[in-house]
Image 1: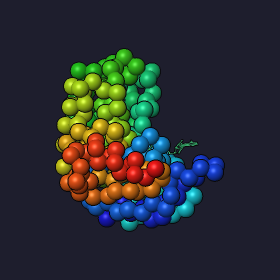
Image 2: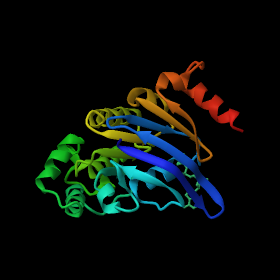
Image 3: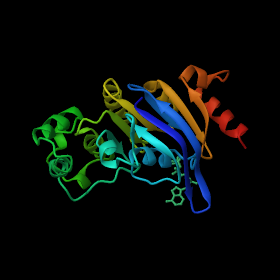
Image 4: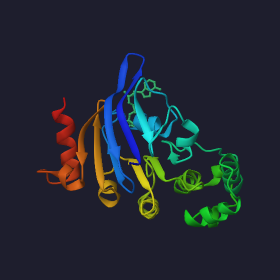
Length: 234
Ligand code: ATP
């Protein structure tokens, strides 16, 4: 099992963001995490990635408890946070070199990763000079440079133009051949193009979990299924 979550509960003051969530994700799955705004997707991803503490429950990454052994579990997860925080004043190569230092990996890996994510033309620019799609590639590069087994991508194509969306999706699809991927998105075509499994969160709870056909169920497409599931909850 790549990731196991048991009874995960997160409160922000009095508000419950995750309400006793349990799930298991196997090696090699590409899981699409769906849900309306505020459903708890980012909170769940941050909890699994080890960047957010939680109130109840346990998370194991490859069998290792992420609260007891945070350094170990973080070394197995590449995480692209929502809004892709980057050091904008750094050059692309300088930033990736900084990330390589953090993970104590061979600097020769930087050139390979630049090639892999399609940053070759832009590698000598400062990050603030890049278009949004290329910034996103830098975000993906920092997430995969240490070759983690698991990738957590929070809205990886948010705000990109249609061409960049296709290119980033192709990249994720390539990465998904070797890694377990958990990604959140509001774009249903993305789920259809990439995911082997869909988990729908609403108000901090899992309300659907299955393959795309099961999720679609009796509805004519994924949008309608999403609408019906999340409105029936009201
Ligand atoms: P979106 O699709 O809008 O990104 P989401 O499904 O990722 O939403 P979360 O960002 O996980 O949802 O938020 C879940 C709930 O927790 C929301 O009600 C949100 O307002 C609340 N929340 C998230 N972060 C904080 C915080 N730092 N302080 C207080 N409340 C928070």
